[in-house]
Every structure is written in structure tokens, then in C-alpha cells.
Amino acid sequence: MDLTTNYMGLTLPSPIIVGSSGLTGSVDKIAAFAHHGAGAVVLKSIFEEEILFEYEDILKEAQGEGVNLEQFDYFDYYLKGKKLSSYVDLIEAAKQAVDVPILASINCIYSHEWIAFADRIQKAGADALELNMFFLPSDFERSAREQEEAYFRIIDKVLASVSIPVALKISHYFSNLGPMIQKLSRTGVKALVLFNRFFSPDIDIDTLKVKPSFVFSSPVELAMSLRWIAIMARKVDCDLAASTGVHDGPALIKQLLAGATAVQTVSSLYRHGPAHIQAMLDNLKNWMKTHDYHSLADFRGKLSQETASNPAVYERVQFMRYFGGEKDGT
Ligand SMILES: Cc1cc2nc3c(=O)[nH]c(=O)nc-3n(C[C@H](O)[C@H](O)[C@H](O)COP(=O)(O)O)c2cc1C
Image (cartoon, rainbow, N blue to C red; front, top):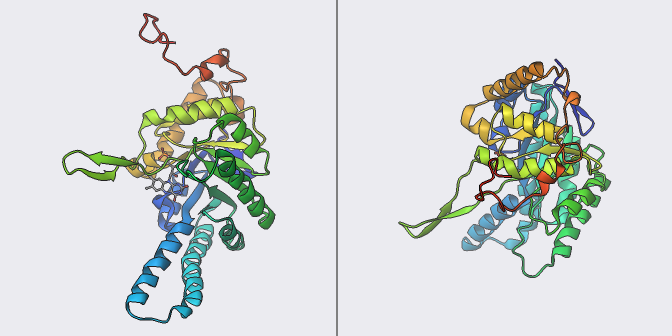
């Protein structure tokens, strides 16, 4: 049975990609994922914000101690170098340790910062680069158009500076999601990852404090990415990777049937450990055997919107008849 998949021009031994997270921040963990059948690994993102916060803290401390601030131009550079060099070390060590593709990930806010990061990452030997890009639509100074243009500007700059394949991981916060995904797929990125899931706040009604909401996804969160993978599968000019809510073999199979080229998972691996990849792949193999499929291409996209026998189901959003006596709720 052939589980290989061609994702962004890279050959992955299986369709499961370990998504960017703290799980992929050490070589030992990356090796364990590869050992248990991961097709590729996306390293934790390097965050421009993180570097800047780190710098601001040191700056404040130094101001308190009466240090001459002129030296901080150099120090700023040094800090970035330090943060980057440990990331570069991680890429190099991961490449030495495993045979599966290693995708680096960058989260930046200012377009000029990306360029230096992307170039260093390519030189370190990453097989591909995943751009983790997100502007929370709560910026009242910028229009939706300005927000969207920032994506295209940054992609252009990154594509002009690296030759390794580039993927873009996005959220579903766009005013016209379908056309936006399609336009992004035509920029030259080799894949789109639908969708990122973010840290969300919650409120503790006893302490009257804001606290973090659930860090990990739940299986019901599969629905959003499943719908959009299915809708976009035959309408984009690049590969699609599904992300969010993939916790088990059936969820993996569903995303492939919807049209995903590869499937990312994170929360399931935090919960169950690296051996869970093998369990999901066993599930996939058994299912393929039952349906007499020999490769992923035999069934990928079979239930995308374009190929499903009832395509309208992917565009149905209201529960119009759900409680009106219809048996199947459709
Ligand atoms: C603890 C944690 C850390 C994460 N860090 C990153 C990150 O650095 N970069 C990124 O693009 N996504 C990050 N994510 C998001 C995941 O890559 C993934 O998109 C999200 O968890 C949804 O997938 P899941 O349902 O399989 O968990 C993180 C998720 C978690 C739970």
C-alpha cells in the first residue's frame, strides 16, 4: 500500500505532517515523530514579536541601570542573531537526524524582517518554509483591503528571496474567504495550510480574571477546515494541507477525501504522543484495504465539492430544517 504523497514538490512517506508547535522544538521529539511515520515536520515558528519583546525587556532593564542606550543597536542585532542561530542549529540538527522533509516556520509582522529570516532558514538547509501569517481583524486603522494587501506584499518579498518551496498558513478571518484563498494560491506559494488555530482568551467568573481558553483543539473543530478543504480542493493552484481538529484516523481520511494533499496534526500528538501517528496510519491503511484503494491518489478529493454527488451540502450553513422534523438534519 502506497502512502506517499507529493506535497509542495517534496516526497512525503506519509500524509501526516506534525504541525508547528512546541512539539517540534527539539531534535529528539522530531526523531520520534519521524520514527512513528510522520511524513514531514514543521518546526515551531520563530516569532518576530518574541524577539522584539525580548529586546524591549532588556532595554527597560538597561535603562534602569543607566546603561548607554547607543550600544543597543548592536545588542538588538546580537539578540536577533542569537535567537536565529538557535533556530538555524535546530534545522541543521533535525536535517541530520531524520530523512523526512523539515519545514521551517516564520511568524513575522513587519515585511522587512521576513527577508533576513527566510534567507537564513534556506541556508540552514530547511526543505521548505511555512509562513505563519495572521493579522487579527481588530485593527480599526486598516481596511480589509489593506490587511489583505499585506499578505500579497509579504509573499512577493519572500518568494523573491528564497528558492525553497513556500507554504502559507492562514486563518479563516477573511471577508471573502473563498476568493482570497484562490488568489493566494496563485501567488506562487506551493501550498496553503487551512487553518491555523490561535490562543484565545476566556473569562473566569469566580476570580473575575481573563484566563487562557483551551490550548488544544477538540475533534469537533475539524468541521471548519474540512468544509474549506472540500470547497477549495479543485479551485486552487497549489496544494492544500488541512489543519485543526485532526485527532484520529477517520479525521485524516475525511480530509484526504475532501481533497487535502497532506494533513497536519498537533493537539492529538500533545495528548497521545508520537506513536499516535502510527495508529492513525494503521487506521488509514485498514480503511484503504476495505475500499480496495492502493494509493492516496485513488481516493483523494473524491468528496470535494466539485466531485461529491451533493456539492450544495458544503455551502449549506443555516440549520433551517434541523429541528423541523427532517430525519437526517439536512
Ligand atoms: C502549544 C501550541 C503551540 C503552537 N505553536 C505554533 C507555532 O509556533 N506556529 C504555528 O504556525 N502554529 C502553532 N500552533 C498551531 C498548530 O500548529 C495548529 O495549527 C493548531 O494547533 C491546530 O491544529 P490541531 O487541531 O491539530 O491542534 C500551536 C499550537 C499549540 C497547541
